[in-house]
Length: 139
Image (cartoon, rainbow, N blue to C red):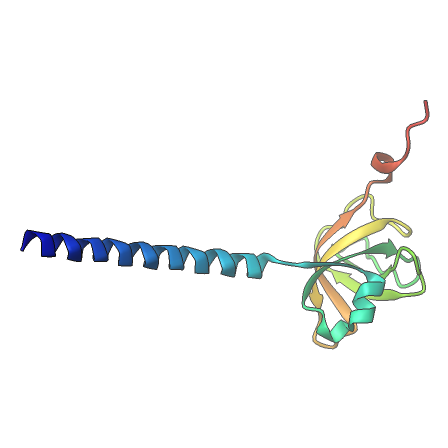
């Protein structure tokens, strides 16, 4: 009888371990899927089709045309152009605090998703690339 009890306890531990490992695996896989974001430049996003873009990070340059920034309010609406082919652009709306280095011609990364109409990218984050960090030093 003692040996039968040890066997049943062994199976209980094995079943508990399998359930725990399965639960942890499910949580990790779900977390990775939820936090994964495509990183695209503007031409890649347009080639893919703006309707099919889910959550993404877009990289490009701020075009002077279409830039709408009010001094008394936070947020900005602008055209994000592809770095290599500037005629390809996506309209971006950002409602947060705009970085001081944000201006036409600056390279930016925006993270968010396409609005329901498919013609406007609704950004939740806006980061500017600081050109001084990437320039060659003159010795």
